[in-house]
Image (tube, rainbow, N blue to C red; front, top):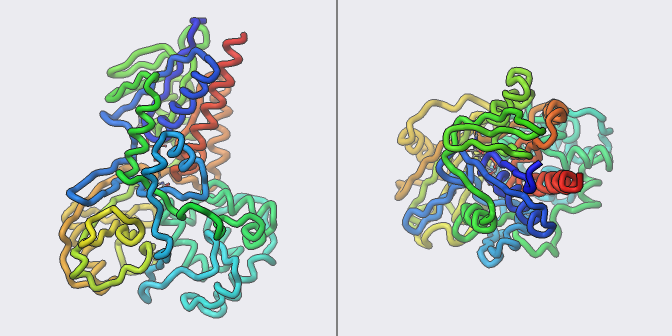
Length: 468
Ligand SMILES: Cc1cc2nc3c(=O)[nH]c(=O)nc-3n(C[C@H](O)[C@H](O)[C@H](O)COP(=O)(O)OP(=O)(O)OC[C@H]3O[C@@H](n4cnc5c(N)ncnc54)[C@H](O)[C@@H]3O)c2cc1C
């Protein structure tokens, strides 16, 4: 055994950088003697996170913000010295609409996350029928079931079909870029699943553990002044002891002598004592093909969906819609190609010049095949639809399109069993770890928290190895 332990991290998105950061901290605090190498396939770090300035506009190709009620991300931002650059959403304008065949309807009032909690406020909503509201308010009396189910089954059982179609489906589909008929409630919405199991009802759960309270000091959504990529840049600076190699392709992982592993590809070859895979699941499955057959690997069966992001800006003076909210999500039956549209210039300050409004639209292939459209065609189509939906007649002053290939993991029913069986298959190979958005949730705080936990496991492993 060499005197220093070699740790290879494969994948330099947020998950890989987070694990590198927390492991570096453990390494220096505890003198673990780790030599950490991070290997990334593409020429840049950050994975799906990419921010760009176009004149005075700040555009995000990937995530635009993170929720504040999961503290992992804001804590990390503070630790990295970026606290002063945190930018909160304009919660005084907080209102989200659902686009349906009858136009834009505000989300019902009195909701916490996806559950009607304040009954009187919920009752006042005009976007659900009387029967739909009564059915949703019966939620506390619906008995829990003990098995994982699809998000659709879960909401239909607890809150009824109308609430599911007009409220839950559009929101969850937009978050996951996915289809609620397939998504697992236990894996995609673990908080709601646990509430049902432990409290018997979502309403009771939220009343005992409010997601948000009036004393909460932070806005609901947070982002960074210079864009989400600031987080990537700051993480990179804070892992200066880590050897970072970008542009490393075709990596393969095979057993080497003394329980170590050989990582070999174009641009890198090295033996590692421990390896952390932080790539998307299919890539992890291919990397592991030298240990576990790719066909047998449950990781190869984690589905991913694709998303196209389309930004459009307009002159404020010509824009007749008040944009009084954070934007809209589209119901499944709505006559539109759009799945969601964020009214960026209302949700956040400092994202565009004051004389402009900025809209960010998303089209994913999670619930229907994405129509093959060139970038120019999708700009034209989305603009035409926005004219109809928002009743505007002006023309865009800026557009930008970014295509994500299969980037959004879909934790479908059976996901946790699939991950557990992958882990079980890897127990024969001590020192191999998995992290990433498909492990502990797709949100920015989830990826950071999963990375922190894996770093702790690796540090414990290193302590044991150093002792033994
Ligand atoms: C369009 C979009 C919008 C989103 N919006 C939000 C949002 O607003 N808020 C929020 O909280 N979350 C959002 N998310 C989710 C969140 O951004 C992601 O879940 C998170 O950034 C994923 O990070 P990751 O490191 O796990 O994966 P990735 O970012 O996919 O990084 C994986 C890395 O592994 C590399 N890699 C792959 N194969 C190999 C290989 N063989 N060898 C070496 N490297 C390899 C890739 O090049 C990549 O850099 C969004 C996601 C998308 C796609």
